[in-house]
Amino acid sequence: MELDIPLRKFAEKVDVSPAHMSDIENGNRNPSDELLAKIAENLRAPVDELKKFDSRINSDVRKWAENHPSVGVMLRHLKDSGQDPDVLMKDVLKKLSEDKGT
Figure (cartoon, rainbow, N blue to C red):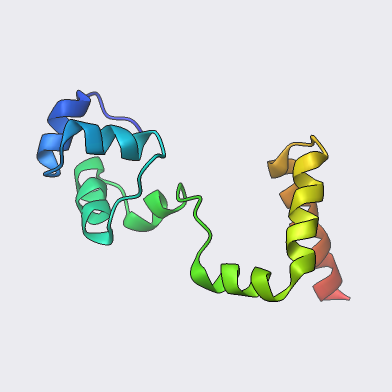
């Protein structure tokens, strides 16, 4: 999402420092739920839309993966394959939905 507004001005609108806003923009820092709501309001975007850009693994998924070591092995193999992760995920999701239907 992009606005035609300088970072300093946008940071001021959401009550954070320009450095903090820059860190969020570059993925070096994650906004609190309260700050995310302010950002969404100023971008005129739904909070859920912005959450799609959050690459952190939530605690439920992390616990599940910790209880199933093969998940880590699978992810390392996917990473080492050199294939496009988005293409791989589409293939995996397609296969899972096909398996559900049978």
